[in-house]
Length: 254
Image (spheres, rainbow, N blue to C red):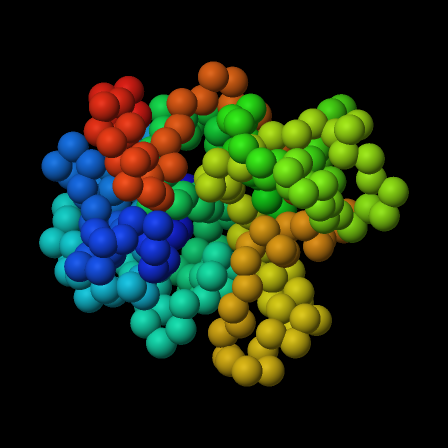
């Protein structure tokens, strides 16, 4: 299985560190985030990875070229940060034909058994999202019987997003998304059709959009499953205070 590592973001919540370096190279335990993720992928049997780059792109590319952990390539978003959905489409030349591929945010450290997660993917799934019971204000909504994605809710505001007009969030499982998912490589044609239907190609050859918008728009038409990881220990190293948490728990997370 191949992996797409999302590393192009601006890392605004990690300022002032990201005024000098990309989020991918922010150290935890003296090791850059991207190295933690890459070594976990390698140990889990992932053979190749592609990294998208934008903020301090040259620094990330130099790290990729020097590392000897696995075969890695760079998906260049220097001209325009494409968000997650556009980033997947832009990486199509590196991933198409691989059957399925993992997506992993560069700022997520966890004790996930990636081999186990891969074994949970159903053949008919367009996408499989790793979720857990982590406390948050924003949850994905799943059918309790099938674990098919039904929508999203913000429990603080009461907002609900779903292609199902009569969806009752109280009859759904509310689970937190991890930033880790596995996609079938059949997704590329579907992504492109979606982007064209939204007029996203009108301003750019490569559209810019969040992958979650895609999931929430098309989950009534395509099989998008959730896989719940019991007792998942995960740290989103997206803020300065969570770096301290990750530093304390690094042995458990890697």
